[in-house]
Image (cartoon, rainbow, N blue to C red; front, side, top):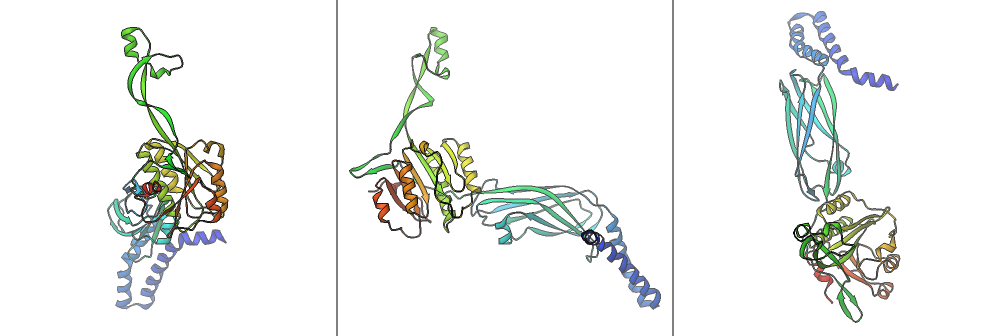
Length: 393
């Protein structure tokens, strides 16, 4: 049954044109007279064109899709340009081009402009563009382009699909924030979060005698060529504040705000030359240790662009022993439960819990018992002074 149905769908236009030719000819033959033959000769050119239309083999040489800009953040608009070239110059009346997408947000929003009608004629190359407004964060996948050629009255049609798979990655929106060094608060006052001393090997400040165990790259070869004495470069010691940012990926009405806050904090701290690692906690825990370069930051942003909320998953982290080495744990969440508080208390000596909510949440009796956990209410519409708000008593 399916084979017969597929055969009918493939040949229905050919059968329709053939049937129309027979009907008009029989009508002229049996009816006779000027009117019937006038109708036959008037319709015959269009039927003959449709018959030849079905016999011509048309092929699409290539389809190219250009998306601008290449880096897109949530809420921004994108201009899409489609370039298409066909093989022959057979004069088709018109064609319909439609984008094939596999993106739920695009399908639900019924994006305007993803299909267009072009009058073909003898042209071989076509271009059309459209704009996608306010794209949501995520991976939006294009599968290809569906092209339908048609005659003047739609009696004859040909449909072909060109695969042109492409992914539009929409990153979370990054908001500007004022960076300030975080403080650890205790009952007797506050102090700076613990630092570790590391050597900044990007710039040498002097020379010293070579000591066994020095790295090979630290040896100053120019001075060795002059004095025949091994000397090592002396680097400036700098203080490094080790932070661990954790994103709780549990489902929430403010899930997008959580992702935006995490992305904004990461970019602000990395640009401020802070030492930070990132962990997304959900069905699967994803760890990005010590993010320092733009390439490492881009990998995290790529992960945040594709991340999805997890339903009914409790907060948990693996390799908890390694997390205890950080100075401060920063958690971005929307809900604070007693189970979450117990987990945080066992993970780090000090934790700052950024709670995104329309109104400041009330602390439970359990929350008040954990003095090493600081709660900071985050307004979903304003992150600019968040770091300075943490330092306030």
